[in-house]
Length: 399
Ligand code: ADP
Image (tube, rainbow, N blue to C red; front, side, top):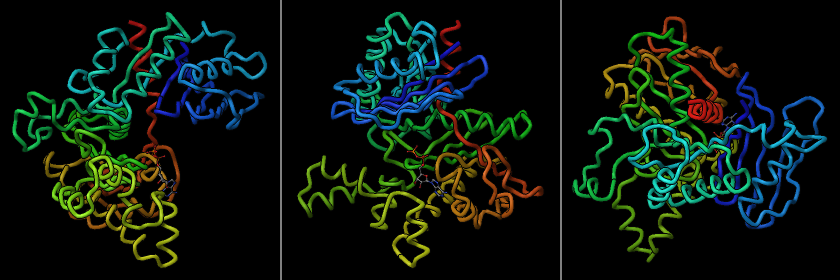
């Protein structure tokens, strides 16, 4: 079975064609600047095929983008399938599933309506995600489409974890609660961690997805019991450009002082804050590392703040779960930032976390970085959201 995995943003669309018989990638790439001028990238993963790198292709809408993807996939010379009919289904990443979705589902009218209902909850992503689905339906009619929600994995959180301490009517009438994101990644790495622990009957795992966007989750027996992101992805630890948890008073104070509109204020918190905001240097952790090494104190402060907040949340989740068997690091910073991992785990010895510096220095897709006598196992696990989306899609369309 061959499955096309789609992650559609407002002006970009990432894709990956997977052969689910052996879970291999046949081709992947990205359509960028959709609705502007259109750039197409295609990377076949099959011997002897030629790549296309950021080539101009007219893409006024997501439909032309999907058409460009299909054209490349079935191309006589550099394609990886003989015809479109070989693609059995499409799996779409959808940001917000609201309270309706606790698992992935086949897209039908009711599902589309539910995704639309979540537009106000995910205004930057959900409309684009639906555009990706509509484009696939238009270009490949009859091919089943599956929606995989970033929020679904977190829907097992108990009420004290997801309830905000604001008037309860906002929960009842307006669905204001903690949802959490990166759920597909947390689901993947927590399951891998349980496997690497030897599939114990009971397990308490803390997952740290640290990338441009970052979130932590606490998982008991593979089910999420808490996560750091909230109603939207702005909450939790500081991120590349997002502020993470702040006091709401700051919003009132700065809007009053500078006369910002709510849009301007939210833009500051989403795009100009986080480690970029503190450092004034970059949102990229490699740039921050370089600047800090060269003596830039604010770059160092940004890193210190990030490590401090992640460490604090690990402690909070150990307390919330009454213990911890494993900590997992994943995503760009989690997988590559050995120094970041070491800094985050500094001072966690009291709860049984002993990092092995030699193991931590190694770059591998999945490995243990704690010492053999560390009561808490610490793993680096490369996340694979596309594989999860493809697996869900395969399972649903095979039913
Ligand atoms: P996204 O959330 O966009 O998927 P990624 O998971 O790809 O992001 O993470 C991107 C982040 O990973 C960037 O800040 C980048 O600097 C960081 N990163 C990549 N390589 C390293 C490294 N060797 N050390 C520290 N950070 C790294």
